[in-house]
Length: 150
Image 1 (cartoon, rainbow, N blue to C red):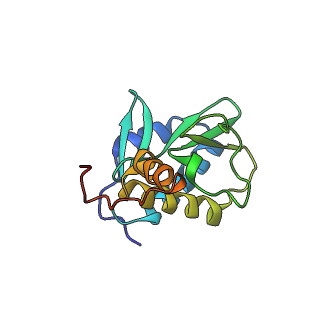
Image 2: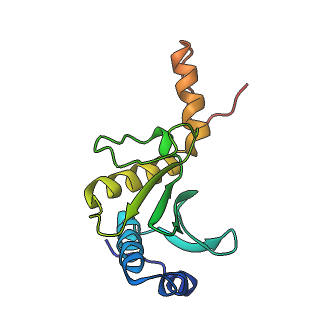
């Protein structure tokens, strides 16, 4: 896929200010999330944190002393069959993948998670999906998202 939105130069500035090993991780994660869908956009939120968005947040990057955190938004409802999530299991919506110096990124697993998050965002996000799951769980028919409640 070729992303149709230009890269955000502020993310280049963020990455360029990191040690070389962190730069490499951030560039690889950036390439993976941008390759997950042509409509992914880059931005800076919370003053200095790189975010990748499409119909909602997909992920954000944060540099720590000995690793890079990839915050997965709505990661709580995304399958993790490869076990790459390292933190946030108690969080209702976000999960974290910490990548340390010398670690290889599980690109197929991370890309699959990005695509799942994007699909969930396009379907209305975790709140809408959770609402539908609750309705189905209690036996009420789930209404299509295009219908309003009566």
